[in-house]
Length: 304
Image (cartoon, rainbow, N blue to C red; front, top):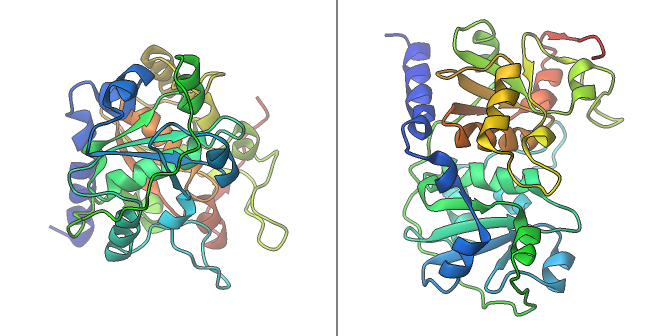
């Protein structure tokens, strides 16, 4: 058995776990009523993802503020990618600093003034990668859903608490450009571009003036815009609508979704949506930023 075959087998085994979990949507997404019932649980770690100013103005009682960028590699050296997963021990320390322990029940939510849907999904993916995904959920609809259900906000800040985490059993859920390139035409491996349609077709170009991305998308990739996975209230769309969305991109049961976006953030929202359907998932963390720098093949699509 070759090294590539072994790596592929490990990746697929990790990705298959969600597909074998009963009712993945109920585990991955919680509703305000559930959170209200469990708000005083001793092992609950409730994390607010979004601008600090919004947290300070009012957050769900007991919530701690989390700067999602603290769970990524802070490398601003020339040529460094914007968003990458930290090494396991570094990540363990960062998660513990957020108050997370081995027995924590973790709930993430985003605010309302500037809904951090995809950053929250990135944190959720990070927890899954760290082996803590079975104990983590996202509050569906964020703080707006909480307020709409008649619950109050608070400005009280809970005391800092460092969690107790054993060495992480990280899951092989992240792939690189070489893996993507080697599987462009592999059956049941669906390369999915999570960027909005204009970037996918090439009518818009990502990146910045100093380091623009290529125009278009990875050769052969399908398009599932991350923004299409939620409704106007930023709640995850019903399963039936998500199934239509993924099927329209040619994704079927049994496929493994290999998602990418600009820098590895929006893709995690598509990954979360795919997981609610029981699909297997992998993240190309370097995403189109990395693909563009490597000058790998892209294609443009006609305007819809």
